Image 1: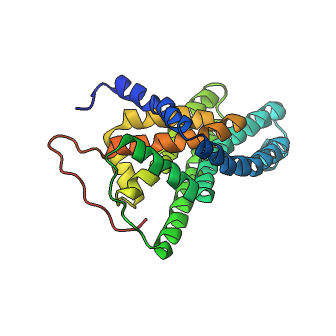
Image 2: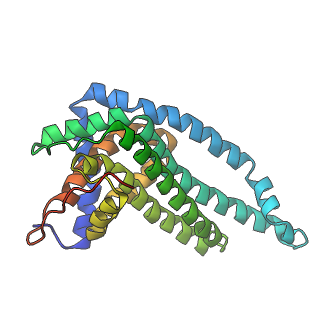
Image 3: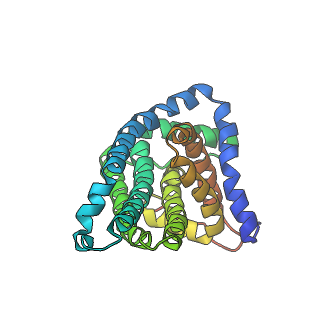
Length: 264
């Protein structure tokens, strides 16, 4: 029986990352290979973010021509630049995860399968034809990035409120980002069990929100740190498999859901 206490569930979700690390230390070669995709993707994303940071004040000025005559225009534009970087940073962390999983898909599938083998009770893999899986994966990545981009706008506007807006915006970014990162990380475990749709993941995550965010929020914060993100990513892939197993474990009195058709 699962623990109903939200704090206990959140801590159990956070504990999945060290459990994933223990699993990966048993496969050092696979752990090393798992560092390559996030390293390559982080170089590209890092360059983009640095470029954005260098030009943040110019972008803030371009976005606020109406404030040119204000006596405190410089302070206002600094605030706009900070809000822009916070919103862009949250979006880029989610996009980084999605792109890295796509680039290293065969490798992270292997990591997930290794985790399943170690834990036992391995599901019979549900095969999806390549001509279906590739376009579905592309659609789902674009869907997640589009949702994140839409969420970045209110986070940016919230960040314009002095002090409080920046703090609250940062907290909401971590919660939203943690939810989206978890959506990506549990994908392999769900797909191996025939749950191909994003809505399948979200339905299971909504049933255990504390455990989901306990896993996702710390992971989002770790992935926001460039060098740390590279080291954490293969561990997160294994931990995501652990979470998928827990989210899909049948509950007493609840019938096990049927596999979904391969769709977005």
